[in-house]
Image (cartoon, rainbow over all chains, first blue to last red; front, side, top):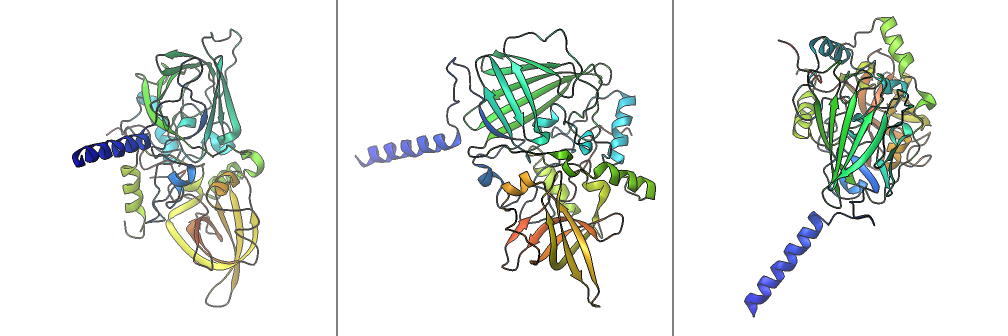
Length: 270
Length: 145
């Protein structure tokens, strides 16, 4: 009897731990995974926004207030592998790095690019999924994407910052095809420019209740030697809401950068 | 590394947590010097919750009795709201606080405010760490040898 209790109890504990670690993927009425929710990109920590970010403070370890807990939005992506730019284009990327990103489009409050919008965790992202479309709302720069399912790109597309997106399901993965970009955003990391030939394929896979695995395959024959693949994750933040971020309200950055250059202040990397 | 007391921790953090969240807006690296940490205490004179960066001003009196008004820059309101700050309540004119941050490159009484310590000992982050918006620890492309 005692042995039975031990086994039974340990089963309960195991079940409880499993529930904490990974609850099942919520599904929509059409049977597909439901991506609806507010997400923190870039994180792998489960829990509410406060639980996942408290103590350390956003961007700090808590033990050392100088130490960031993570890379900045302008940092090199996590893979450690250099982006496959053609030699002339790599020089241009390096130039932005040496100039500490003063040519960053977001310094002018312009939209961050794709997948850059899904790379940093300071600002949450909300996804609203219906059987016909997926709407993605980004707090950062307050931009949005309306992504129709099983649709074709329209034939009157204009080049835009976030491009034109259509999606379909491949098993439990939402695959988003993005095209018709302008050449005015950075992909992910300082200076990661692209041409108007950019084509991005995003894959969103909700692996359990808390986590979406994200992959972006970037193709651009004008600047890359081969496709560049980027991975990130998004964690569910129940109780968090996205808010207004009116970046242009009092944006002093462009004027400050001009002044630094005019005054000859040495800020560049050597 | 001398004169740059945080660089080692900064790099370690970046390497250990390379797959973790990425944050923040632009601007730290060009405008502020991560090699010039500063800790100042004073009396808050003005607080502005604004986009893309909030800032506050404080009167800082040095050992000789000279008072200067400093400007501290930090997170936008959306981030402050999620990190324990309340508009018009957490930090007000007249409050005495200590701020740790990094000085601006132009040498004026202006700094990036990282951590604010309140009279009761409570500490809150007002802005991201040095290195944010600096282009990262390494470029996105490999440097040709």
